[in-house]
Length: 364
Figure 1 (cartoon, rainbow, N blue to C red):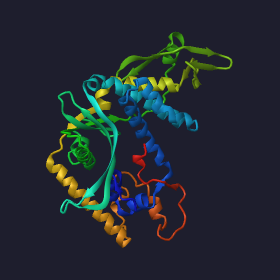
Figure 2 (figure 1 turned 180 degrees about the vertical axis):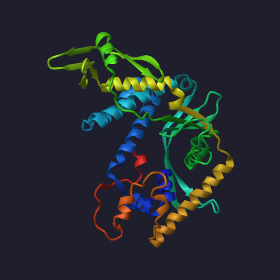
Figure 3 (figure 1 turned 60 degrees about the horizontal axis):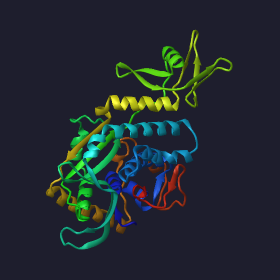
């Protein structure tokens, strides 16, 4: 078993010991899990490019390059459009605050010996991870800066923020930063709410206005906005509409035509919406971490290491059936209920793969 202990691994262990065995001992992962890591990876890569001196345009361009190597599909184009727009809106939203901070380190890896808090001795495990940023705030304090994308409600009174008061990950990152010689005094939690939308069909009136003026006029959040201006070319035989350099899907009505947003038009609408509702999509808050929190983190890490040691020694990884459907269905639910026995079966179930490194989050 890999002796590195990460936050993602601890979450897996807490949800179900058997899930942890499949994920982090055998390395069995759902084949489609790559999509989840891709979204967050692109977001973090763009911020890291920017932190290392690239312009906003260069950071976004380089972060989105992996999409050029993927098989073309509507799903891929939509995800790329959303992420490109999200990143543009993100940099626009925080430009003043970002200019007031100094980045000390970006994507800072750590792999620190796990110490028995009772004896002060190393025990064969290490605590590993990657801190998004160490920043110096405008008032001179050093802080861990953690970037997240989420689908959750970011209202200041929501449970999203309350839970962070006891969040283990940022406690571990604070402990790691201090152990690496950065006397951080705060955690700046930076969250982006992911847009959930797809290209939509314009009305006949919007389509007519676009064809006549090149402007995409849309009703957005109760008011009309010009989303973008484009070169537009259309012809009747065969019936085609080209917006910029993209063919639009055309629907013929009784009296007029309407088109569906091209991917560029769609991306421009997402950008406009995020800028128009920036408090809905973007939030940053300081999360306190006291010395008592850090001490409790040391004790917790030691206990998790002891759990793993005992499970490995006894070769017993208990299932937690309460974790199967508590917060969405577990990705291993069908595997566990379908009769697969990892201790005796010499095959990998369909829809799953074995990853070469169980700590995929450390590879980006």
